[in-house]
Image (cartoon, rainbow, N blue to C red; front, side, top):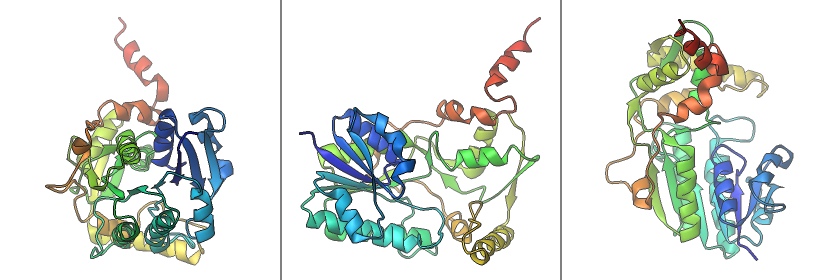
Length: 325
């Protein structure tokens, strides 16, 4: 019988790419998610019955243990960008990650890949970065041979980075941002998936910081995005004190509505992250150490940002028509 991998958060942005690749490797894939009925799209990644979504809440021991029953390897891709309801950074990214590692050890599973983030730091002023660091510590306490992946901002068809800014650029001549000078090293989602698959198939351990071939400021990345979607916008760099006022108002709106409104624009915690560069540290193990050549944003952005162009899929045809005599 083929081997089995359980991917927690396997229908999410990164998890689905790992699931697809593991199915191609011939493994059975169990996609552990909170809403299996919304993850049915993963089933065609493999043959009939090869990829199956199952119900799991990583805040519950029994649920997590049932999802990994009989597995040869586990992958944790569960993460949140904003806190809402019971899904707090500590509950999801610290306690949830540690729970998976602890139960995997108890089940005799020897291989684990954990998705963290560049900037994970228990001393960071950001609750997000703190929880990521504590999650890593919790994983390694139970699974010392686990593979820890720390990507910079991840780009790809379903990303919440370029898609979000491209959507905002559709309205008005100004694109307000905070931390325009902050540097990022965008990494392609499938490169992250390839790294995870290496960890599963080869039992690779250690911490790897994943970044693309280019380091750019947020302003430069937005300029590239605007060029792809054929829109001219003024990028307005908001001072952090002004951005904090906006974030405070949005955070308060989420609190007083008891989660009916979720602040997906910018939070005060995200602004704390934006004060530091998000790039691969000098001396860190990287994609190159895994034998993976990092994919640049060039060409990839065009493949999924075209819907944000003024003429959408017809933009190239209209440009071509202008050259007709």
